[in-house]
Picture 1 (spheres, helix red, strand yellow):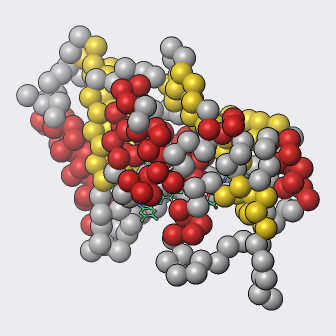
Picture 2 (spheres, helix red, strand yellow; picture 1 turned 90 degrees about the vertical axis):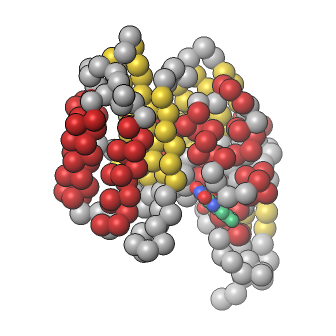
Picture 3 (cartoon, helix red, strand yellow; picture 1 turned 135 degrees about the vertical axis):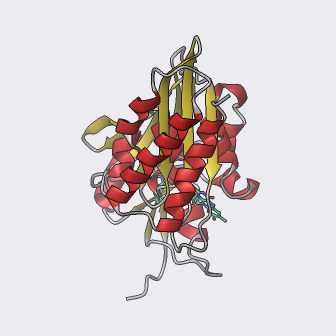
Length: 273
Ligand SMILES: Cc1cc2nc3c(=O)[nH]c(=O)nc-3n(C[C@H](O)[C@H](O)[C@H](O)COP(=O)(O)OP(=O)(O)OC[C@H]3O[C@@H](n4cnc5c(N)ncnc54)[C@H](O)[C@@H]3O)c2cc1C
């Protein structure tokens, strides 16, 4: 049966939000609305009968910074995070700048992007971010990698409320965005983070997120502990480790697979002599 009207519910705090959600269990959280509305590609979008707007909840718009972390509320717009400037890790800032155009970035929220498996999942995972999820019974924290790897992370009437990003010093950052029109696979984002201590590569984190999140923790250790600049033979071999990892997964398709491996090799080549 056609829905005759849409009801927009605007709770002012979490306690009212969860009471409202219990009364209207079919209500759909609405953040920036760019996915809910624009992704339909219709002139007149169809909206859920009950819309649970998150806009009035101050906590969701809060940004705090301590010495060790940057904490961002789920309703902060992508453009608002970019505008924070230097405190935002380069990997996150570059990724957000690569999402859509300024109009979409002024509306889209970080929570909405992460809940729709958007590009921001790549830097968040590489930076070891953690997410606060909140439901009627309380809140819990989950790592970015776990959130993105599970298909049904959010429980019934549960929201992503806060993102905590460690403010580690990364000495080398690579951001690449792929389009794969020929392969039929959706492109994604590749992030490479490196720590360098006295010309030793002490930490390497490589994450790719497209249709699925890819991270090969085993191969990262192959380069850790090596002297910088890196030997080109090691970089070649590192690419082979990723080829083996991706072949074992059986996805993504061959074209995107070689794009990812080439992207990783090219990214790490910046650390060779
Ligand atoms: C023209 C265009 C180009 C784009 N290009 C890119 C791109 O290059 N890369 C990319 O990553 N994305 C891209 N996007 C997608 C865009 O990033 C997402 O639409 C946006 O981030 C979603 O955020 P939102 O706040 O608008 O979410 P909404 O549309 O409000 O919500 C999206 C979904 O998430 C749920 N949700 C929202 N917030 C929460 C929360 N806090 N807790 C639980 N559930 C929640 C909603 O119920 C809904 O199901 C593009 C979109 C458009 C329109």
